[in-house]
Amino acid sequence: MARALSRDARVVPILVGGAVMPTAAQLPDDLQGLAQRQAVVVHDESWHQDVDSLVRSLRGEPAGTAERCRRRLLIAAIAAGVLALAGVGLGLWATSGGRGLGAGATLEISPNHGHIGTVFVVSGTGCPGRGRQINIIFDAKSLADVAWCQANHTYVASFTPSSKGVLTWADGKGNRHEMTLSPGATYIVYAQTPTGDWVSPRVTYRVG
Image 1 (cartoon, rainbow, N blue to C red):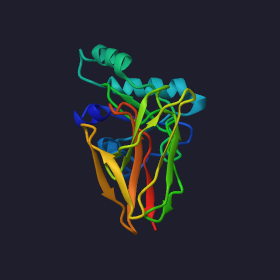
Image 2 (image 1 turned 90 degrees about the horizontal axis):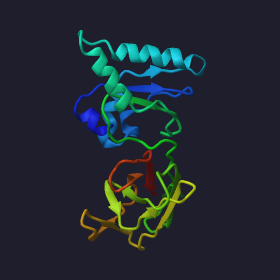
Image 3 (image 1 turned 90 degrees about the vertical axis):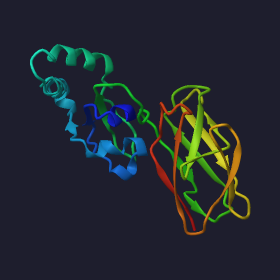
Image 4 (image 1 turned 180 degrees about the vertical axis):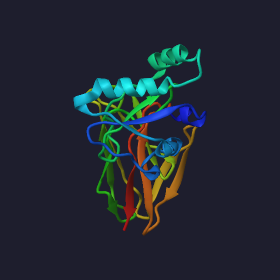
């Protein structure tokens, strides 16, 4: 999905189950352009008619391209479904493949605020499969300790800053570095697979 947005491909957010469009701030950086797209509402009672109407709209191209567009949709469209995104559902159709929020993905931090040395636990649901590595991204840095997706598609990892608020994080080569939490600061936290093909919603962690 991020690749489709970066190439300015036709991407249509589909709202299901009473969902509303997320704001750009609720989306990962590479998906924030989605918030600027015109969404389509699909109702349970008129699902097939609404989807048919959407497909006909997406086929509205110059003569000779409609059949090619139909094939791209059949091959590359991401079927509309419910994605957990800050507590709302969001379906997506795209005319080219890409990466995006995992279906049913959630993330929670407990507690969601604390002092610089407070132990906190990151957990969630909807990860892609047993044994998949889940990186915890904290303030745009991948924390050195990772979570692992379980058979029931849940993951959990705990983090213990030092008494001075120091956390360790890993770079792309697996080297460990240190970051220091600042009192009064708020950090954005989310989870993703190393390849980025699955991403959780973003939440905030506040240092009191």
